[in-house]
Length: 504
Ligand code: HEM
Ligand SMILES: [Cu+2]
Image 1 (cartoon, rainbow, N blue to C red):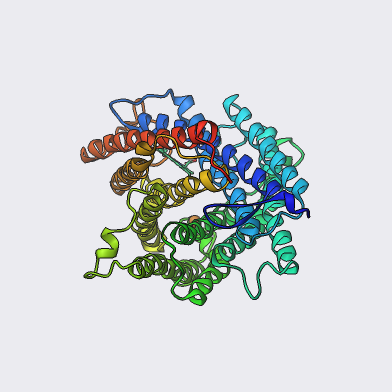
Image 2 (cartoon, rainbow, N blue to C red; image 1 turned 90 degrees about the vertical axis):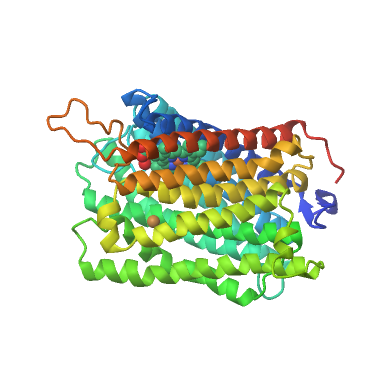
């Protein structure tokens, strides 16, 4: 590879390969655009669940809810992760992407699949929501789109391994990968397992939607679907935790206090996360109690333990780095002097707090068999996962975008005053949204429900009046989160398009 294909990053000193840079740029921008669309849908459905606003029509509520899940959880997160794949397997190792054309092929497949799915949902032919549980049936184009997208994603996650093997040959690293890359390696291993489950279930369902297979067993569908659905959240967790370590390193020079321990924690994710998938099936009658309890009350805690390790290791890396910079007065001077107005840093810090306290703790509670029976399918569940994937992963990725803009796009951030506040506005909005969803859910308010007054139903039912307050707070938290989201899109896209160009 010719030397002129590389440049040296003036911020990090990393050697950056031109094709790698382009792949990161395109995947990141695509991710941000899908976040914008998914976020808009989230805003509209939050307004709909606010009882005195009840904004969307019945049909559009379910349609936009489907699109919200797909665009926000699948497309924003995975396109961004593919950007991270190239960042950690090439840039971070000072080496190159070995097969750029495979990267572009993967990207093109993902984009085609994404467009198919968006198109068919907007056309009203796939109001099946994110889980597309059988026997709800969507148009065949929907499943085809998902399959094409998944093949593309698999190509790109697979590219990670090609890159690190080549990097090893080139002598880019000696014994083992740096922690940021190691975490993404865990993510990519889980991704391969996950996408295999996806293929096992989505391909038959695609044939079923075309009338070539006549029956898909709903219980089997749910089991295999969650072999896809739950581990894919663990891809997100691995990628998010890697981003935490990388942001700590890039913003304050943080190094893991005990790297072996952090690596072991990533390995625990790989081994134990699939069995934890069963927490989605705790009310399903097809598994024995023994089975459910072993999987969700014992095995799952080994994965949770891994998160606890990271939850101490990342703040410790920040503390040690800041103490080394001389902030040693008292117990907490380092915390006070941390770069709170750097949006990459504050996004990471808030992401850890929201992920841990709102997403993590509630996940452990809702994942026990005893508790799940009264929380399953209530509004508390989206409350939990807006703590994990929105407060946690999305906020961490937003923070990393603030680093990619100077390092990869070579642009200065525009509207820096707004950027400084963005993580706080978004984080507080998501916290209000998530807490009020969980509060309403604890009074039994169902998720994915258009009309909880049950107007026109043969039997009347009313919830405890307290839920009016919580459901209104869902709207208010949603508005605040949407404002924070718009601030992010403005700063990110504004900088990418109009930011002052930085010398390499
Ligand atoms: C402006 C920010 C957001 C707002 C206001 C918002 C609001 C909502 C609301 C109100 C629901 C529940 C709908 C219901 O059950 O009635 C929901 C569901 C959901 N949200 Fe969000 N959300 C936001 C951002 C995100 C992001 C960034 C992600 C992914 C990373 C996400 C993933 C999901 C998923 C997967 C569902 C479940 C879809 C389903 O049940 O099929 N949300 N969101
Ligand atoms: Cu799960």
